[in-house]
Image (cartoon, rainbow, N blue to C red):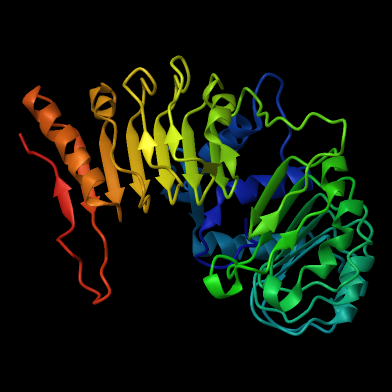
Length: 401
């Protein structure tokens, strides 16, 4: 954990994927990776070595931090044990006799080829702006982890045959992702994360990342996160193209999925499913009517910038829902009144939606109050107008007994 920058909010999901890629987590029979990871973290938290900095919508640990003094100790011990080296300055070479398997660069610097050739690292993590990654990095056939934040790799990304984790942040309109043309040769790759922070800005949105059909042949791939406007190719002819998910899945975020609402049953039928976040045209169509008997364990539902006008649902469709968050769904006319009858519902948040939807949220609260249920919280954040003034005050609707 010391490879991350000082006071850095460490994303638990990223941390676990790095641990797995490094072989630092041993899977336990009859336990999911999520359960094993949580046990590791809770042990560190109970020892006051790690601090929780953010929790998920259902109370899971989402991000954490380590104390500055502990980080200093980790860096010192790791360098002694040759476990990893973190540097914030240019090093022409490593001290004589020292070879480390893991290198982390935490500030903007100029790469020195000598340090790379003298260390033969298995993991390279870059948390700073580096104009380009030298080809020496790509000559290490044993590299397992390559994490590049605001760094540009060379165009010939073909050497690290053992690569298991690859994460990079680049601008498609500047670079075009040419280096990724050979990413499909990494047959051992388990985690692929591609991020373009400009892709959702209208002026750049027409630049698209084109993934090739070879991605379906990467049999070891387990985690794919593409935060960019991209085209996902169809499966090769003759293969089943239906969307499927593992039955153990508890959380799902879909962005730009362009899936039909009638296919939602694939998600709703998952027996352990608890968190669903639908963003930016994840599903297509003006109407969504869930089926009875689905989403039996769903606790959190987010609808954000969804192409939805009519939502037809009742309490039987989401019997255990606790939190509903609707954001920037400008076409959605109202929240179904039956949603208010869900006995487990704790809060409804509405952000930047039309007046009729806001009215329906308030009516749900008023109805529940008339039944003696004063615990339901309804929070409304209305449209923000061009003059920079809210059209009405942000409102927290909660009746104090």
